[in-house]
Image (cartoon, rainbow, N blue to C red):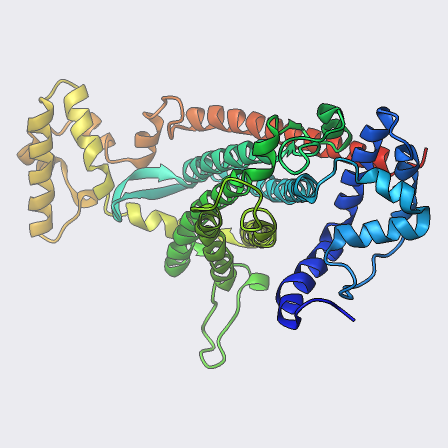
Amino acid sequence: MSPWNTTYRRRVLMRHYRFARERLVPHFLDALSAYAKGLAALRVPHAAEAVKALQLLRPLPLPAFSGLVEDVFFAIDLQLNETAGAEVAGALRRGLSRNDLDLTVFRAYARDQALAVMGDLLRLRQRVLVLAEAHRDTLMTAYTHHQPAQPSSLGHYLAAFENLLSRDFRRLRAALDTTDRSPLGASSLAGSPYPVDREALARWLGFGGVVEHTYDAIAAGDWALELAQALAGLGASLSRLIRDLLAWAETGAFRVGERVAQGSSIMPQKHNPVILEHARVYIAELISGASLMTQLNHSTAFGDLNDHSTGVLEPLDRLCEMAEGALELMRVALEESEFRPESLLKGLEDRAVLASELVDVLVAGGYLPLGEAYRRVKNLLGALAAEGRTLAQATPPDLQTHLGYDTPELQAALEPRRFLERRRVMGGVAPQAQDQHLRLARRRLAQDRQETQAVRNRVRLARQLLAEVE
């Protein structure tokens, strides 16, 4: 008969056991195997036998929760007692606490989830760069304060967004580096009474290093908070692209593909870009995660507590799932859909966004000082509007009357592509500047991909070595 209160058993023990049994058992076996190796290196009796016994447990299923033991660690301990004997099972527990063991497992699992998110982010960035290159010369109107501002190109916009995503990646990588540290050997908080080599334990588990202070190793919850904050930042970035894509979808400048759009049950003309709405739902939960993780750390004692150990893992797992979902949906939306250049051009028809270029040409050509040039161009726009005309309809006499000049250089200032050509600075919209930036972005993406793969390879190799029967 289970000794546990029915509500506590159902709401706490069973729930955590189920999650750990489904997701964490390989990580528990890895951490226990590494610790057993550390003890064996010290010639602790029966520790070497524990290493082999743990390897033999790997193919065996862990029983479902019965209430006989409270968690997965004790379930593994029970299996070890039954298969290898009390002396072997007891040897493994010398100096080992669930405090450092659990957090080692949690960090290893979170590292795997973060790497999966980073892989999806790399694939989205690749897709954005492909589109940026394809649309280098696709003209569009760029907006500031929700008003038409200046001409740009769709490729320039998309490359800028990939730039933002590259920083989201960098923040995730920094959070991964914090998470990718081993607490094993910290024991309850003061450190194991057995002088295990903590750096060796970390290497055997594929960690990038150790949490160097044993008290910090079991008390800190900032690793999960940092990861949640990086994920929330990524969600905020993705939401901004979704907003613009939906705005373009309204005007027909972005057509969502048939396989990722839905119609209406009553309005046959509808072609709804719902994939973007579903991505936004994922993102809403993703952004909220930082607040939850902050609350789980807020005003808690600096020590081992369920709030920021057991309490963070399932929400963090959910956040990573939301991030993967949002990233995958965004990538598929961009793969299945198309931008329509003719609709993007509509914002340039009246040439109003070239008013600043007129000012600049008047100043750079030595015609007028800046303040006077600005005033005259604004007067020209007002006079044209009063007559129901646009800047695109301005004639040489209009330029002469209001600007005082009607040179070919001023008339050429109303050509959008000339505007682009003049912006050749680093990161500018000129075709040459765009090409230069795309080369930089591709190199950066390749480096990020290579570094991420190196972490995956390190973890994979460590697990292979731990699982081998010697």
